[in-house]
Image (cartoon, rainbow, N blue to C red; front, side):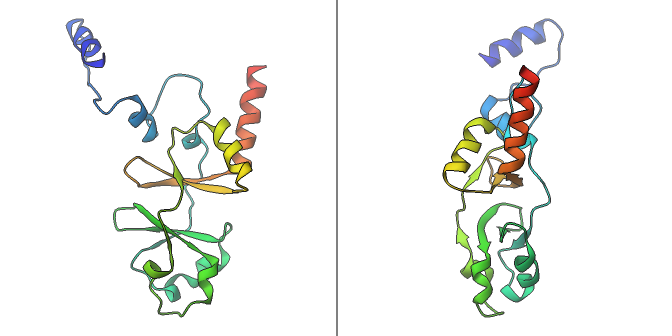
Length: 160
């Protein structure tokens, strides 16, 4: 229906753009929206410990050893999440390529994910944080479960 709506708005003199990919894709990229949803993308920390798929363990050992959640998001040159390097890799040789030590295809969620169901799933799986990516796989940030739960409490308090 959006092409029809765009045509009508143009007839009324409004500039329009038909976003063919749709609403879910729009939200998955964390773009502005009207409404009152509590979405993951609104509560991520962008300060995520990362490394390159081309790094060697020796290049990232210090960062990996001190990161809060015990992992580094492994990115390619375009910022796409390819894997997750966990602290268990610290036992490997300094010259080991990150590409051989990482866990490929880590679980990620989109910025458009509703916090209510997401925090429940994170709790059941005993996950403290999850990577948030756009639909093209580019890293947005990290959603911490305690931050998400706090945001939900604040949203529920505001509704009362």
